[in-house]
Length: 526
Image (cartoon, rainbow, N blue to C red):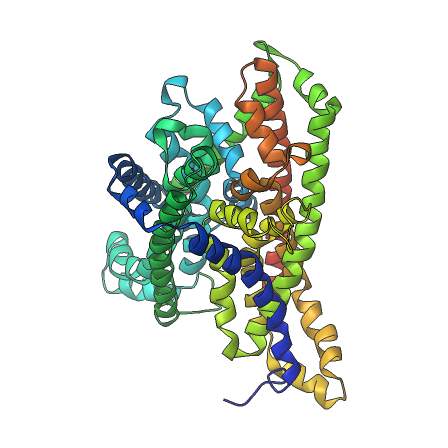
């Protein structure tokens, strides 16, 4: 294969330097440091403890049940998205996507309001919250792939006498099998490593590996035992990611890309009833917990009141947490989007840099709690005594946001035809001019999407923040957790008012993402 325009430039290799140094400095080195300095061989015996075995078993089976429940709800929605065209379709897709971008602590707080007290601190509450968190994500992924199946395959099967059920089982389901498995593995990973939801809804009696890592490291002082559990979690997640990588390679061979849309107008009454029912139920499932949070923020002493909002807007400590979170979000955007653009460019312009994809995925593989702990231990001594630095928290947030930001930018860069760059080069443009006038103009909308994702991650991140936050610079999720853990109706309402602010921001983010990603997709097709 001939080298592309940018592959011929030796300076392209420099694009990978900053992402590599960033991940090595704040993930590989801190985690490696605590493993070598704090991990003790005798701590392996905790894996034989009945308590730990129960935690591992509960973490595993609740993640499996949550994954199955998410897919059961997602498949009918995906079918509607892929096969029918109707008014408000984009709005519905955006609404069902809101739960996935909500901060985990907000989801936990929402189900404290939706569920009766008898269901709090139960496995059912955790499974329902995890299902809520992930069903929209699974529906979008499966629906997008479903759209790529050539509609003539269905027509040919029906011509040969196949019933709708036979078409689905013999053609559609087989073509979607790998994509469904891929989505299942991602959802399982998210449920397996969940922290904020478990911290709020689970309590001490429903610990998972992630919350047990925090408990052992911060409350028991058993850092070595926490590291053993972290390594166990890394092994499980690594296996899931290896399976995801293999399914992605196979999917490219099994899904037929087409410019012919399979979406059709709804003509039959039965179709209208089915589509309406699925859409209304999915919207209700997505919005009821959100509305419950807004309702609780306006209820004080069993009566309608705006006292909580007035108190939040006048409380200096709460306002400081809001300002602090916004400041951290701005810094996170700058760090995450800059490094993501460099990493995505190195991946797009030089296929030999595929290791960057694996390297920048480490923040997903490694527990956020473990990263926070590693940063505390590693950067607490000279000459790198940065533990008290205000920059440590946005750096941790940027690490969490980086894999998502890269995946927002990379596909757009990969889709740019190299013929456009070659034509500009022939006309005398330098590589910098080519990038500025072609690549940047096309990818800037994806950069906006990456920035929105980074801001949402920063404002909602709770795992690493639990370690790194300082008392005089609390973030919104930490403040919400503190308010919800205290007795008193007024304090609880204030916590829900702050959660409402995060929800409003999350809704804005998902609509920004949908607007710019849809426009970018349309431009690419054009």
